[in-house]
Image 1 (cartoon, rainbow, N blue to C red):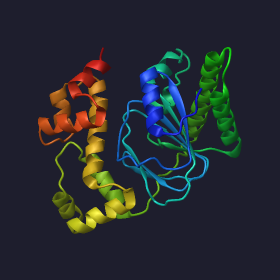
Image 2 (cartoon, rainbow, N blue to C red):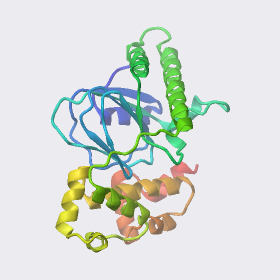
Image 3 (tube, helix red, strand yellow):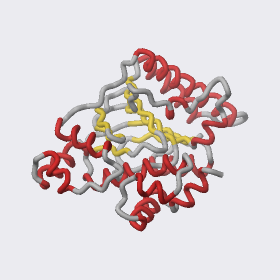
Image 4 (tube, one colour):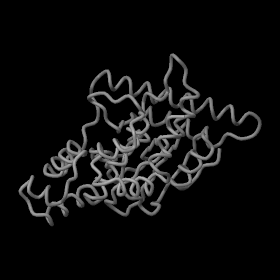
Length: 286
């Protein structure tokens, strides 16, 4: 398998080929805004050095941290410094993951099962890091006769390991606690997500938290790396994708996600996802 050097290339390849792809990154692509994509993502940090905002949680990124992001998780890699940031990203088509699962072993579980103590972040031990990197090396160096079978077997073994780690962590209820940099921002994130179905303006937030509009925008951007409006739009699109996949009607989804009107919903969804809500719903429910 060819090792890629761009998240966007890996994302595109996994979706177009209905397979998986691996990217090894040493420097930043142009930073993507808060976004959602239609593939699963495994993000393994080799050098650490930044933060992840995933849905309503902020995480530190340290060497050896692994993040599991599904197709409904809005996320943003904050630009805290300009140092070298080495990481490995695996993008996976969800249908491919389902196709290699069995009735007894659901490899989707690490992306879909969300307990009360769920965290997107797993801190791997040194032994687990070594095993993870061994599997990655085996994936990107497979070639010649039988390379496709070796890739699939290695990929399956890798995700059996990841699911075992997640299951063991969940049984201990010792999930990684989200990083807290600013208690006010934590409260704002919680409020936004608890009221996502309602239109919320910066003025509304200012009154709710008794701080000025300019200050609330400044502390939110400083802590998360993105603006309140961009964050809210991405979260609403994320929730809309999940509801459409569950079979809810487009108009009902628009109302439940807090968009001011259908035209705004249509424009924002199509820009983010690449197809209309109606088309997305049809694709999900074939």
